[in-house]
Length: 186
Image (cartoon, rainbow, N blue to C red; front, side, top):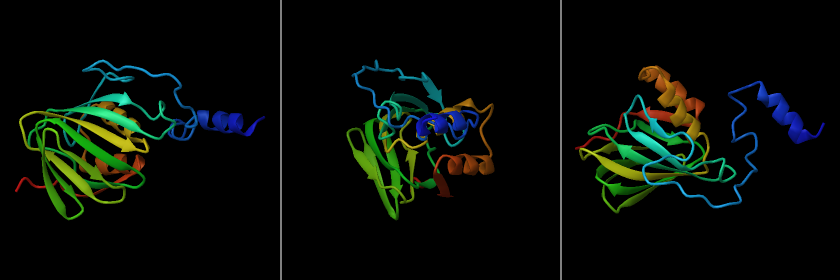
């Protein structure tokens, strides 16, 4: 049995391990594709539960890029809410504000972003953001893709918002760590 087939066969019975990041991440889509406005490529609208109730639409996934990149469009429906201070162990993150206003913290620095602004969040640097405006929209890019698609799909599939303890476990299971409360609006 060839090594690749052996690994895929062995991991197939282990759902948490048989992820695109571990199996088939060498695959790269060899044909362009279009994702219509207001739609997600694979999962449709991913409605989050927990830190906010925003909607994410996957535009380009890790399975499209051999695990190198994931791009989401986020429709922000959670004024005065955002993410806890957290870090990604292995991923850089880029936000581009399409509409609305947000407050970000990256390390010890705080930034106000509005339509047309972008921000780079390096891996292993604690960061957080909060939606300032009543509504908004951002493009969110992860490089490499990591387990972010699985994280958002898992969060959306929960029957109810997770407790803080459950959220901390979800973050850890998807290669992130919660480090504190969201950035303040002050």
